[in-house]
Image 1 (cartoon, helix red, strand yellow):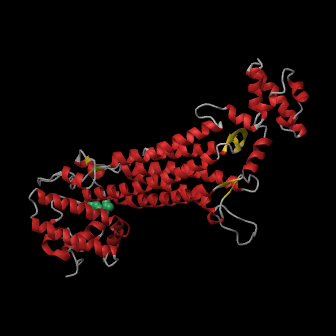
Image 2 (cartoon, helix red, strand yellow; image 1 turned 135 degrees about the vertical axis):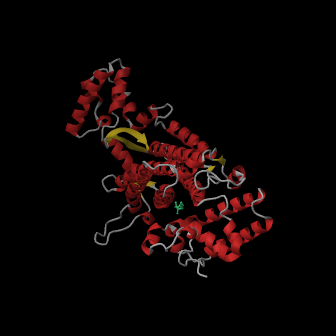
Image 3 (cartoon, protein in one colour; image 1 turned 90 degrees about the horizontal axis):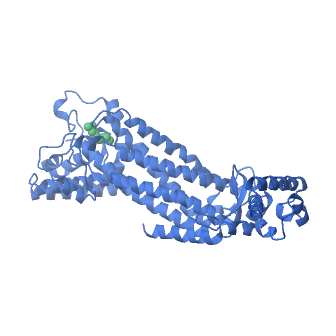
Length: 465
Ligand code: ARG
């Protein structure tokens, strides 16, 4: 007997004609949800074990189901499993094959269960494993970022506001700012995991089941912290998928900001860093080109990830309780978000440690934009001027510099004294780039010793994960 004849579907009893072939294709999810096959089998094993423990299945039946599911898993692994669109989704494909393999006992597996709690369980198991993989890649990226920062605590670059030279900072300080963004991303990811890690299994279709099931047992067997509280909510809730996509959007936003900076820094006009050739490509027409494709592509991928978040929010908006077929649409956005985030993190985790800073270029750039003007104002405040007056004096000195092409540190003492007679020889200490960054010597500041300490703390946070 073929497993998909006429009205022989798993709900065949009620139907008098077969499903329209287009409708069959239109309503099927097997093409994409077969990705959750391992989770589906794990859930079925936990469910069958529990049914046996509470006396709904015999030991012998449990043994048959275990052996049959092991065969199914093997067939899937070696690519011989015959996925069928007529069987709609991963759940029915596996169950039908099990029944084909072990006979009538296969039909008992679905006792006290529905595809509604089954799919809710599968997605959570799938996403939990994905989250753990993503957390590993995120940690690897942070390790690389912190290590590069620790090597560059006194590599001076211009810090920017409005993308105009503002004040000197160290390259290490800049990298540790990236790390703070990533640290918050990791925190959000762990929050999402913790809220998600509850077992919906046992909610059945929506109202629970008449069998004496043990939800604590299946929850524990599947590594969930506990069973969910409410059966209606269990089969309808997709908050965890939305939360995950919100995490992903924010992470990708951060990666896009880093990407943008890498693209700017690798331009000939900035020339702050070099990316190894293996992360770049050339141009088919312009021989001189070395394009930062990897950061550009990561920057571009934010679009689809943001799109998936909006897809899921819109999918769930106004849905009445409990399960609705709409929810089948949760998977593709979620899966693509997982794939995209993993790829982008991998690219970044490989690339960041390979960044070669051009210290001399960064230093030149920091010297040329009057980046120590605030330091001069602070020096004048030290001489007793109110800050607003000091600001005015320095503004005039900068205007003179713009006219003459001289940086503040390059002016004669007498010239500076023309703006404020109390200025002494010691002014040149504060006008140097090193003096400027070293003076910002407090928690969160860019002084090299502070950056080194911040890198140490950042590393300790990673180690305590
Ligand atoms: N393929 C379905 C999904 O992805 C499984 C649940 C189907 N449940 C139902 N009552 N039709 O959501």
